[in-house]
Structure formats: structure tokens, C-alpha cells
Length: 66
Image 1 (cartoon, rainbow, N blue to C red):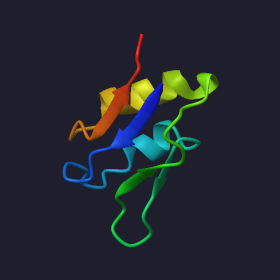
Image 2: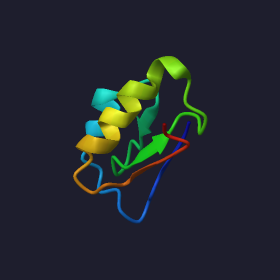
Image 3: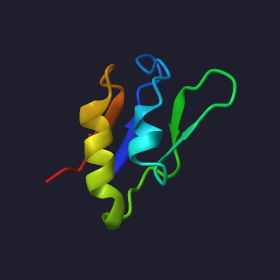
Image 4: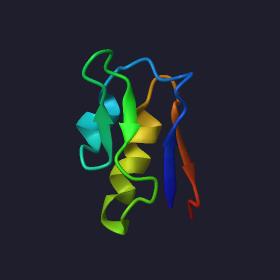
């Protein structure tokens, strides 16, 4: 699966990096998220899905879900 952040929606709540720290990093200045790698390793897919569901702004976009 692939993941990306909709930068227009992200407000820097930081939940994604708390739930899936291997997949999301935060900007040191404004706290907005970025993905570590667009292609998510299988072992982190559950965390990324949980992060997407937990995002208050629905800024995490997942492609290739099953």
C-alpha cells in the first residue's frame, strides 16, 4: 500500500507520528506531518491505517488498501 499526506488538510495534531512513528515524521517548525516512505512496509500497514482513522483532519491518504 502507498500513503501520502494531504498537506492542505494537515494541521499538525501529531497523532500519526505517535501511532506510527516508523511511517510519519513531523516538521520541527510547524509540526506538520510527512511520510517517511510512500510505500508502506507490510509490518507497518496496520499502524498506518490506524493513524489514518485517527487523524482529525483526515489528512492521511492511503492507496492500495485491501
